[in-house]
Length: 208
Image (cartoon, rainbow, N blue to C red; front, side, top):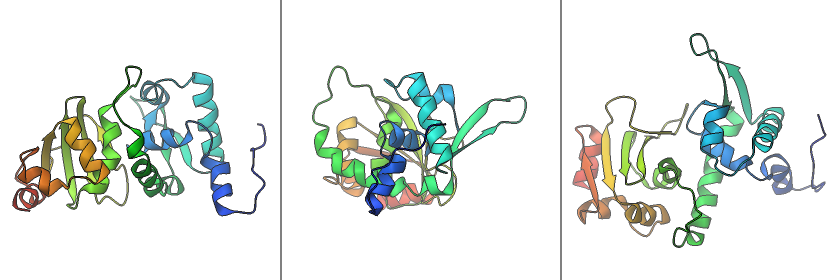
């Protein structure tokens, strides 16, 4: 195994970039914040990454203690990758980076890939309720574990159980909320977010 490349600078930011500064590494973290993922699932949701680069990054991340790999029990019997506690500590880093990069989005380019769950982290930062929240966009559904301290913070597709609230909105509204230009309560009052569900979070959002 080749030695880790380093900036050789006695600076915490430089040391952090030694670990997660390579291309694709933080996007792999973004995907693994949804919980354990198989290699094939990661590759499918990281359009543009080569199989060699993905395998190399995963090995580096495991070596650095950011991820771990384990084998699922039968009948699954497949290997999955997941974040360690140290890896999960990158959530606020990714959220801050995403917030900083919101102004770079602009109009979607014809070559831009998109997955519904890529909107999860900006929206997660904007919700002030706690519980399981399902979100419906034109691009698809995802769900958020708002306030979760352990386990995944979001997931692709519909919620695995009855959510505490369901939010339906268009992509423009989701982008505005993620950028902090529109609050969730204001979007609900303006009719830009439809809230359904009987849980406390749904009631709180409707009454805000």
